[in-house]
Length: 205
Image (cartoon, rainbow, N blue to C red; front, top):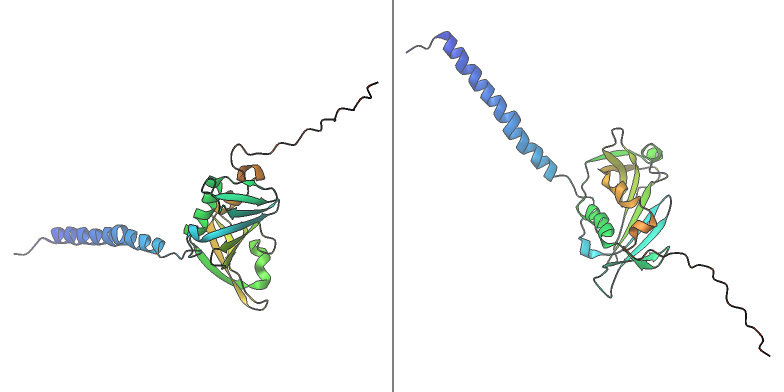
C-alpha cells in the first residue's frame, strides 16, 4: 500500500522533530549535567582536615585556628584580636573551599596578572592542614559579567612561564569581605574599656 505524499511528508517531519527534541532537550540536558559534575574541584581536602586559616583582605589580616579544647566554638580568632570565632561564618568559607569548583581555566602569561586583578589581590586565603600541608587561594577581580572571580590556586609559576587563572564563584568575595566583628562569636564583641579616674587618697588627720 502506497502512502499519500502529504502523509509521508508529515511522518518525516514528526520523526525529525522527535529527533531534535531528543538530542537537544533530553540528551543535551544529560550532557550538560555531566559536564557540570565533571568540573574540577579547587581543592581536594575535607573540612575536618583544616587546622588553621589566614584570610588577608585589603582591610585586615585575620588568623583563625581550630579550637583544640572544645567543639563550641570550633574556631578561634588568634589575631588581630583573641576571641572565639563565629562558627557559621567560618563554616561558610570552609564549605566554599572544600566544595568549590573551577568553572574555567585560562592559561596566560605571568606578566598579564594585572588584567585579572591578581597582582594586587582582593583577598588571599592561606590554608594549613593537620598533616602540615599548605594551600593558597588568591582572589582577583570579577569577570566582565560579574558571574565569577578570577583566581589562582596553589600558584607556583615562574616569571617567564604561563600561569593558570581559574574562574570561581563570587560567593568567595562575600565570604571574606567582612568586618572583624562579623567573624566574632555573637555576644563576644569587645567594647572599649572606659577611662575611669582612680580616686585620690586623702590624708586623714
